[in-house]
Length: 118
Image (cartoon, rainbow, N blue to C red; front, side, top):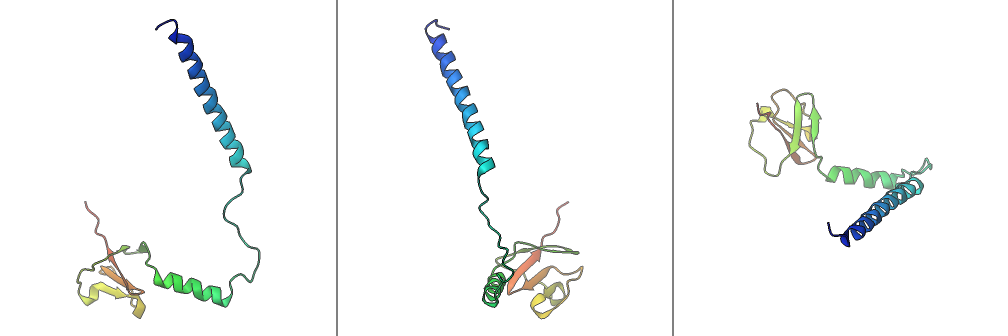
């Protein structure tokens, strides 16, 4: 390496190493002193009837990502397949899931069982 470049490369490398070490130490220091963004309330009356109604409407109007059962996992589908009525369980009508169930209707959303590939 050229005699003129060697000191410059060494100095630049040391600056990068020291700068990185300072950045890591600073980020850990601020991480210990930062406050969590979520806050909990100690108020026992936070769930008012209006708030409860709002939460229920939100839950009933959104689709679950997955439904777990002892007969398998059911995933939401955009376009449902046609199955015989004995393979469809309508939870809105309190129907039970069986081993033959391939489709669930819940809150007017359709979920289908994914078959395992061997």
